[in-house]
Length: 307
Image (cartoon, rainbow, N blue to C red; front, side, top):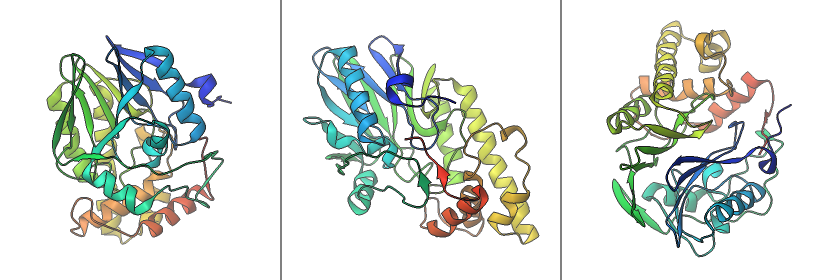
């Protein structure tokens, strides 16, 4: 059995000179990646973790690697696996999309009792971004430039932020890229996510740190795109046949995507795809409770989480 504890599994990975990833296997529910840029006398951190224990391990690893305090923290979107540990980065200014702040203020810490089992959250406090932007923002860390890019519409969520280092050709993709796990579009847009992948393609990164899974290249972007296209095509077939998202998910052969983890995301993705076929705008509010209920039914019970 995989040891997913942060002390045993998580590792600092060099992506370029002074540019690093913090990769947490196995990348399943609530086990995300973070990144950091060593600017000499200070550090820029990209995302925190889902639990107190995991975030403390992250911060210890960053301090050991840089010897410098984190002065700036960038959140790639509002989901708790990327933001729950924000409060532990004392003294840092937190930057995020305007909607990231709005959603974190409205929702606080989400632990989804009854949906996930096995999480060790620890003591958590909500700390939303203090500096917000809408489209683009540039951050300078020493002589490293970080361009923060919102795709302009909903994708994985309504508030995704790509962190692009143009000189190093490194992209912190947040959850616009999943490597080895099923993409999850329930709180964003299936069609919008596919359009967001075009933003990544136009950047032409040489190294991508996905939100979940190991560092990769553009080939994984193509896998994500094929999965999202598969969801759209499956939804079109199911709606034409008069099937509910859950009925459709149960009878769907995942084909090349059967090896991806978190297959229970399929009915949630189909709920979003159905809404878009009915004319819903990208990122529009839909019945999340119904979608998550179908995910639990597809999974035949609460979803195991190793956070």
